[in-house]
Image (cartoon, rainbow, N blue to C red):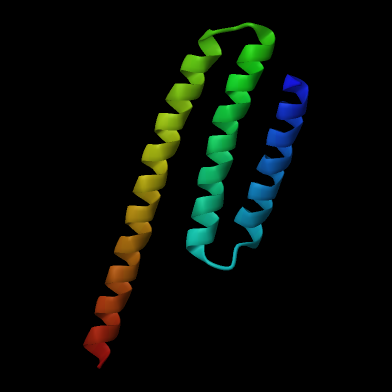
Length: 93
């Protein structure tokens, strides 16, 4: 049963990567990368359960925190770029 979960998570990761490469806008791509990171956390947790290695849960938790902080940082940086672009357009008018 856990092997089926690993396969389902891997399929979801492939679909998230497809959305990241084919996404129509930047926010769709950022969201896809965030989903990919979340699926990676799930994959690490399931592999830890299958292999009987409890320390993999700590690694998964650390990866989840890094994924969250990185996503917030990237969203803030892209928002700042949009603000600067809007200010430049305002000066031209």
